[in-house]
Image (cartoon, rainbow, N blue to C red):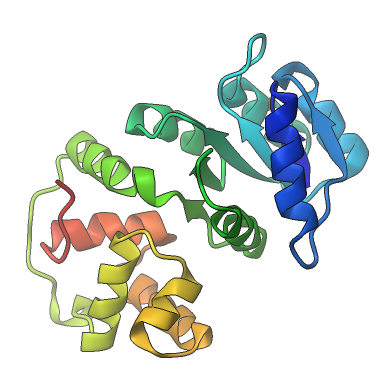
Length: 214
């Protein structure tokens, strides 16, 4: 794990969260985006937490630079800005997740595990705004699902918890099932809806009128 943030106190706090999590450790730090890619390459980090607002080279540019030289790195943007305008550019640049800085230690470490596994992670604080923005941009009209797109009751319940910003573990606890069962539900939903990730699942759910973000 590499932490990229111009605030040394933030780097220290994030480092403490990561050090306390099983199977995680910080292998490098950078205080600005201009050296982030070099630190990631030298440390061979799997995941990079990148602040989006830094004084010289910002997180968006740092994300692009990191993925240009080490495309298998999972980048998580982290910032105080919980807006779609801040989220969408960094996701389009290839980031695997986005967190706000007031996320709890568990939310941060859960997000790191999620992106490492390839499932992506979004802070609940920005999920609704992101889906609204993407819906507007794509002018997605409401429609009914076809027979092959219809969900089972438990799959539909999974989507509701996903729309509330819950992680797989939280969904499992809410539904009183195992995390493996939640993953199976999500895989079935993605297959039925031809969705490649959780964000596309939520966009499709909104178009089917199954969830709303107001």
